[in-house]
Amino acid sequence: MIHNSIFKHATRRPWLAWLGLALAIVAGWKLVVGLQNRSEVNLGPSPAPRITDLPAGVSAQSVSARDPNPAEGLADTRTDYLQPPPNMMKEPLARFMAAWNAETDPGKKDEILSRFVEDLALADYPLMLALLTDAEFERGGRELRARLFRRWGDREPHLASSWVSRMSAGQARTEAVSAVVQGYASRDFEGAVALFKTQADPSVREPAILELAGTLAGSDPLRAFALGAELSPSPDRDRFLTTTASMWAALDGPAAAQWAAQIPDETLQQRMLGEIVVQWSDKDPVAAATRAMQSMVAGRTRDDAVISIIQRWAQHEPEAAGEWVLNFPQGELRDTASTELVKQWSQRDIGQTGEWVNAIQDPAIKDVAIAALAGQIGPQAPALAGEWILRITDSATRSEELGKLAAQWMSTDAASARAWVSQQASLPEDLRNRLLRSP
Image (cartoon, rainbow, N blue to C red; front, side, top):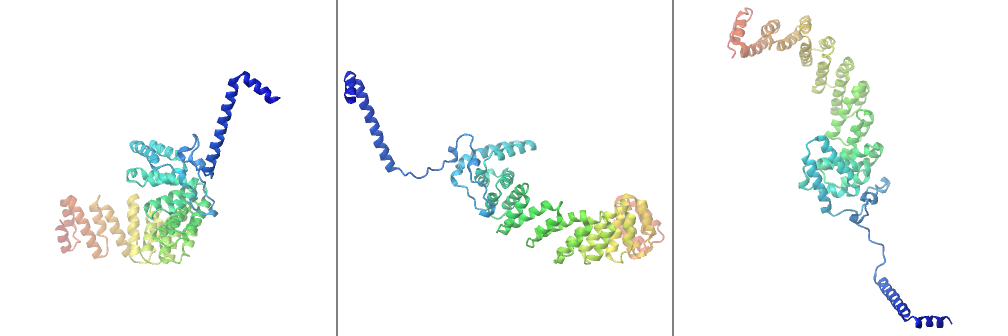
């Protein structure tokens, strides 16, 4: 009954029958084509989109592989498809370089640099850093590399350190290691220590640990020493330990000196003690100078340290420094110390200096002090300097100092110099004649 009804309607409206037939044919054709395509196409996973295909508002950073956990190793887990073609990176880099190099205001240059680094997706850092090795980007490239590595170290330290470790050895890698360390340590110091201690390559590990230790030198020198002491012997390590010892001594001289005395390497130990006692002397010159004389091996390093102490001490307590110098045993160190004391003291008060020199009882050290004082007076008052030199008891020293004074005086006022020499009846005839012949 139903079919007859439909047939009756169709016969009454012929166009309706033809429309139904057309729709049935189209549906059947689509079904056949779909089955054929299904049998020919590999139905595996869809290919990953390239970075240029990402929807608006989604950056490479939001879809990139994140920084792996340290326990999972340091391998870079990024995939190549996240990197844009090199020519796409060169264009913005060239625009940045042009703007940065054209700007002369330091503040604005830094703004341009900061904005470029912050706008760049982390996923693009490897390619950008690789492009910066091109000669065309050499000007300005160093600053940009440092900023990129610092930010990468802050955001993805394990990927950054892994990438840096694969760089060729040289100044560029050393600077990169420093920047990555700075970036990570500013956020997680202990994490940075743990990460770089595991680096197998000593040319990466040791500069990184030195950088980390250096950040502690002023605030926690003992911890800085502990980190530095783990490194292999090298000039860089020794310079770091010596500098840190000096900084520690400014805070606690006795503790720094006690720690340094335990170092088995005598050369390094003496260098560190020398730096320590000099810094320590700003707070307690007597204790520092005494430690230098008692704990340091006689020689150039000790003598240089003692002279440095005297020079500092004389600037605020010259009388006390002078008393200490006079107790030195006779020798080159005492002579040099007294000379430096007179030089420093006379710049503050030449009258007091002269009184101190005049009061010295030991003729040997008094001769040395007089010679130093005359050397300070001579350029302004050569006649007065000559009177002081005539008090020197040692004839050889006296003749030598008069010769120096005469040569200097003749170069500025020959007539006055010859007149003064001629009036000195106490001078031996041969010495007087030699002085008068001075050019």
